[in-house]
Length: 382
Image (cartoon, rainbow, N blue to C red):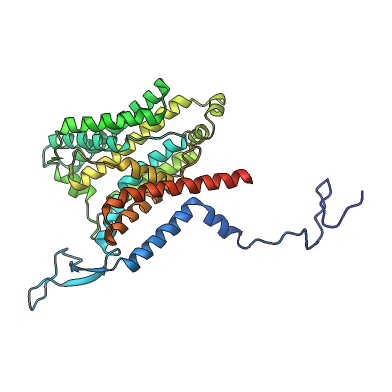
């Protein structure tokens, strides 16, 4: 057999010759391209660019100087007037804290929503579950004595809120599987039902009167002048969601069902039970977010979570979850929640009418879906 230069023989033992047309050269930009192709890295870049833009164009404001030790307002010894400093609107510590805390509630729920979307499902009732868990948890906390310690109040708050959320999620999943109705229809109905229950139980009023240990002793605990507990819970939930989706049998089955439910069923995957599990876990995470909200603010309102279903779905989709199923990332969901909150915060800093908020959220979902479709089309072409 005559071998041409640079052509691998059939046995694959000989190395190709140094033909400049066939010899491969190291691709120095390969690693960077692969890094930027990862959904999470792209979101980090977007968040960084948004932060820079808000820092540059957000302007500054005058705020009272706070003593870092006593946390009291500093006054001029000579005049007795409050000393004021000029700070950047976006980089102000209180503003950054508010962004992190607001994003944490959405991110915790978005982790659960990502698993549902990866199943090729949807949950429109998550905002109502959030409100229901917050109200019932608030009633439970109000029954405790105001002096109840953290060892009593915190377990009550977490168990009641997450238990209510898990029960509501389980009911969603059981009806979807048992009645064989699309999740959109079932959760559209339960969204109204759960919200109605919230108003019936609360009478449209705010529920407060919690033990101080829940708010000041934990959820609003000050560490170094900031209250980082909600953000820390967000990080822990994101890590837990990443581990479950990436390293457990449940996670692999979720992606398998979302990719091809029929094939997963023939492969022996208990599709119905997995769906019920995922909807239950999503409800429990909505309950956890509700517990964070009620504990941080020391009260729960009947309109809590209104419109949150749009924000949560937007965070999951922006984070890389495919509405066609089979793909999604807990880390991406958390980053998507931060993007959503930066949009909200930017509109406030730039003095944009808040009436445009829903328009921007809807546009973000449309853009994210179009990007996802473009990626899928490119992958199919290859």
